[in-house]
Amino acid sequence: MEHTQPAEDLSLTQQPLTPEFGDPEDPRDEAPDGSDTVVLSLFPCTPEPGNPESDAGSSSPQGNSLKHSTTLTNRQRGNEVSALPATLDCDNLINKPDERGFTPLIWASAFGEIETVRFLLEWGADPHILAKERESALSLASTGGYTDIVGLLLERDVDINIYDWNGGTPLLYAVRGNHVKCVEALLARGADLTTEADSGYTPMDLAVALGYRKVQQVIENHILKLFQSNLVPADPE
Image (cartoon, rainbow, N blue to C red; front, side):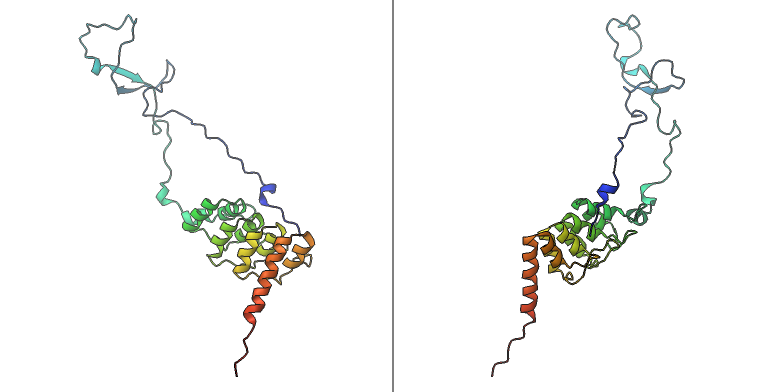
């Protein structure tokens, strides 16, 4: 069973934001001389030393001098706000899938972004959504060994034994990645030890075949606890 994390298939690039124009409230942000549009603003204008046009005896008060500003506001440039944030369909955006069917929650779980996962869940992200190949947020978090995210998702009653088209369950992926803590968390919540991968391996078979001793010990201890809990004490005579 081979599983490739989405990080190897898709590269997320963030393009730097480049401001298109200056702050309309900043009088120091001036366009070059000869601009066609001029917006007048009232600002105190201090005469520059050595400027022949500056006259200390001028009758106009210094505080009432006009300073020409060529800065244009967004409205003057024709940039109008098309929609207010309050009118956006947040539920639709927060669960919007990409071309692979990955939602923001699935991506955040795949990359171990615990705070993003917590934020998305609080704002109504659906942890039950499956991608096009039945990948789930839980499976991808288990693949990466992100135990805290696995715990958050399990609190939302997601299917702990979800089987995807790559032939794996969250437990099988956790075993395959040798993620001991994640295996413990999944077993504690009732993950099925009998589910086989497409290769025919159970989680225990996979741990033995890969030589993961700690994972094998965790599974053995869990099986022992299951046997002990099923023992019925004899009735005293």
